[in-house]
Length: 384
Image 1 (tube, one colour):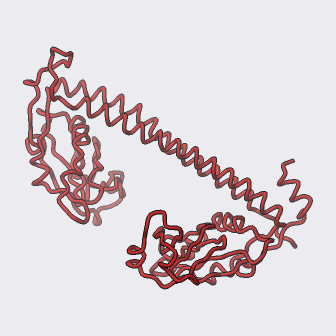
Image 2 (cartoon, one colour):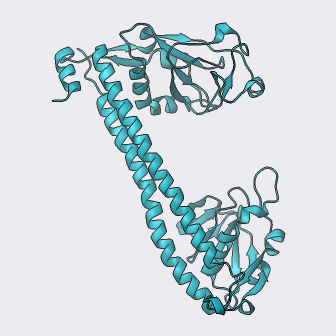
Image 3 (tube, rainbow, N blue to C red):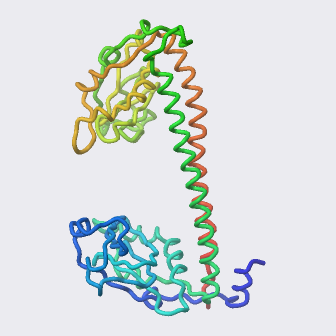
């Protein structure tokens, strides 16, 4: 039997009492400060953190804000607008006055335990916040929320376990994220190397001479076509592509040959190779490719290498125009050489994507594992 199980059996075998958060914790007010003032006062490594809505923070010095506004107790900051959430903080801080925070009223409450419990139920607060136009919760939503209050020894043991598990999960996630980044960079390096023909000739084993590589504008390789509205179509099995990928499925198609889809607005770095029927909306172009000059899959790999985001024409939302895209110059080897490179990249792409897809799945599995054990530890029988 674990230490936690021993404590529960000895100290609260029949269950635990649930109390209102407002009864066990003191609610603390914030400070009147604008986003502009926060930005002006923000200094790297300053000792006092100022929290605002969502994930907005500023670090300020003593003297920058009234001393009476500085909170020095361990607290739970309630992010009550926009991106609803909770943050446990143990250093000097304050927050904007539309937010609030909680500190423990007695030494029989481990505030970190309360924080973990609130995190376990974050979905409830996020759902409640969506009832208005702007996601927002009220002080009543938190003050009146029921919190289990087992004996302090049980609270502390749960916090110890979850702190250790949180640290371990963070370390493993960081390692997997670093591995994912390295794999992507490795793939891009070899892809770009295969698709680069400068300073390569038969004498050093390249397999072709520079004379065999032609320089072509994109307009010579493909006609760029606009997308259109799909709202009047019926439902079907033909995917509708937008900037972020497949949006829905309809019963009509725009084109029936292999193509490269190029976003016109938004995430313009995301390209899609499609070799089945599809429809595209007006935020993404499709291409009618001249297959006598270039293999469609080769053009896809080549445009990925080109990093089309460098041709952005807008100061706000990233945008690409047909006129700019048409003038992009690309190196085109023979069809045979294209076919050879596509075969290599397809194999390499599959190998890397198997790894790349596996790593996010592993990261998500770690997160689910953590949430499972956290929820199990924080589930208590209510005292009759």
